[in-house]
Length: 376
Image (cartoon, rainbow, N blue to C red; front, side):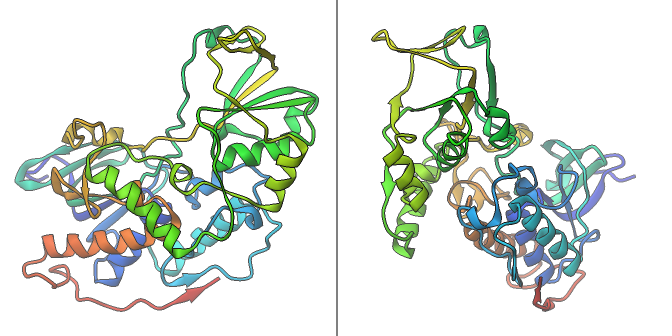
């Protein structure tokens, strides 16, 4: 027992989430001398390694993944492009955790993070309470699919589902399907489903913007800068596609030529048999597939009151402006695989400076030590 919270286990850092952002953060903690299960713990809600990738639909193969950057210290080599991405990346993350002895606790639910005594953060979980000096939140978005609400939605007689539950194209055989959303997932779903469905309709709020040519480093920097600006203002981050556009691939060109990617503006209401627009147009449907994205899974941080009046959490780098002990990694500008790697390193650097007796020193109980580079 201790005077911080009865029964709480004291650690320097709690990392919440073991996707790309969480594993990158854990790697960098180990690299500067923090020991897993002594100085820090990694908590993951998922039943197995793989982060959100383990839940992706089976037809999303590794070769069709929209950008996957290797974790620090270990390349992903000789992966079969025809194999399901959930399997390839799940195996890679599993090997990474073992190679660097990250000792991820799973499955663990995190219920809330609260202010404790002695400048400790109390992290309340399904395996007990941790009293941490700092927190790296790397929970991503997969657990919070965004479902828009429209008049008449509850009366629709067909099936409604979200990208988070997309099973692949086969269940849509012979069905009339409306896909809602202007992102990469919506386009991938449409191109697959159109091969087997009786009819498909694409609906988006804004006209889609297709991007010709490679996604260059300059384009990447511009996109990150736009997202960073919103985060600095305390506004919720926008989707990646909203600032990068949709890649014009050969498959997309075929979809445009075939009419599969002919887009309609957003409907005004949902009817029992489909959707309707204010001008009287209607489309009948058996299925509405909401490819409408996700929101940051940060409700457990609500007791810390980190949100700004604009609805988002303002950051300086990865550090939350309202509490320097709390870092968000994989949020806003770092919500990409390469961004998550860089953000994990930056968060650990700041936490090390915050917690160490003297700036630049490692944790009090462990000296800085190099980690080997591995490969799978």
